Image (tube, rainbow, N blue to C red; front, side):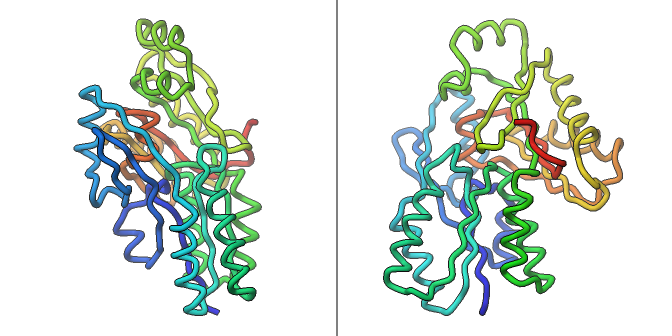
Length: 290
């Protein structure tokens, strides 16, 4: 049976990679300036425009993929006789996985032989994208679906995220930090270090004074925690701070023998919450700290 790999727009993989590998993706929604736009990995809502609007003080909100959208896509491939692997944005951050699971049950009521696996990535941005990337590579190598699904479930909690934000107001707006903490942190030039825990939720892992030191810290996290680094891909996601993303890449390459680095813009769905200047290093480690 042919296998169809599906993800969503929070994966932040390059659009050309998605297209070249025939990966289906569903769009989360973004509300900005009174407009509701389906995020299609930057094709319609251009990232430079989006981040300029945020820098100019505009606010953005996001919405999950709905059940109907999943049903439509699942049914299409089930009718074609394909087996489905869907890798989605962390259930700790969005209701998208819940929508997918409900849609799966609805499809099974119509097509009892439908073969659909739903993977809660418990990750975000290129953390989710990393799982999609590795699944795609395994399928290209001819691995069967069971092996791919088992690998994803066994390794998803080993996808480590180390990221920092530049403007604390976006974390304050999203309820990640208090107004007082945001005010004091901004005055003292404090840059929080964030990660994603075993429940797939964003948690604070530390504080660094100064942007340059925060970027160096992200690089140090890769060196300290990456497992078998010479045989894995390091992912770097940035929210309109490409120059600093390349600085982080150079730090990582200087300190480690890395197989490959994939660097890409952080999409509107994740960028709406961290804001411009969010920078993340994502890699495989032994396990998450919490």
